[in-house]
Image (cartoon, rainbow, N blue to C red; front, side, top):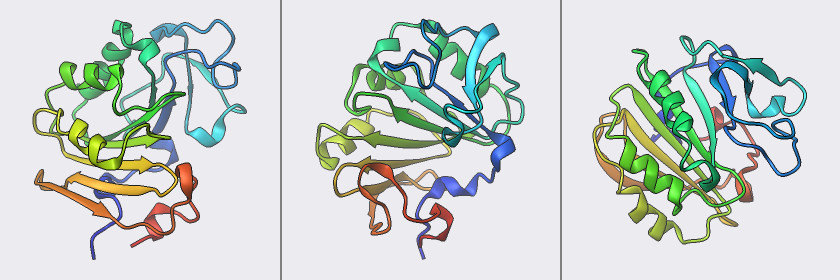
Length: 201
C-alpha cells in the first residue's frame, strides 16, 4: 500500500518540531505587532496548535529540529534572512522535513516560490512537504510549477488544498519522479484533517 505521504519516513515528534512565520500577520495573532524577523529575537512555536498560546522568542536551537513548518509569502521575497535561516538549518547533517506553507496568498505559483526554486539546488537530507492553501490555479498548473525544483531532494510531497483536496507525491523516498496523485477522502477542504495522517492509507 502506498503511504499517504512519503515524508513520513523522517520520524519526529513534538520535541523535534518548529514553526516559524518570518513576517508580521495582519491581526498580530501569530507574531507581535511590528514584528521584524531577526535571528536573535525570533518569534517561534513548536507547532501550529500552539498559536497564539505558547509563543517563544529568542534564537531557537535547530540541532534537533527534524520538522520545520515555514510560513512564506511574497512579502518576504527580498529578505535575505529568510533564506539564511533555511541555510543554517539545511547545513545540519540529519534528515529533516521542510514543511513549506503559504500565508495569506497561494504559495504556488508565487514570487516566493520562484525565489525558493532559484535559490536552492536540492538537499539530499531534506524532504519537501509543500502545502498550497486556497490555490489560485488548478493542480495540473501547480504541478508544472513544481517542476521548477532543481537538484536531488530526499523527496517531495505536495498537497493542493482547494475545495477538493489532493495530495501529490512528486518524488518518492528513492528520489524517483512519480507525479502520483494520491486519493485522500479523509482530508477536509482547505486542509482541515478528519484524522491523523499516520492513520490514512
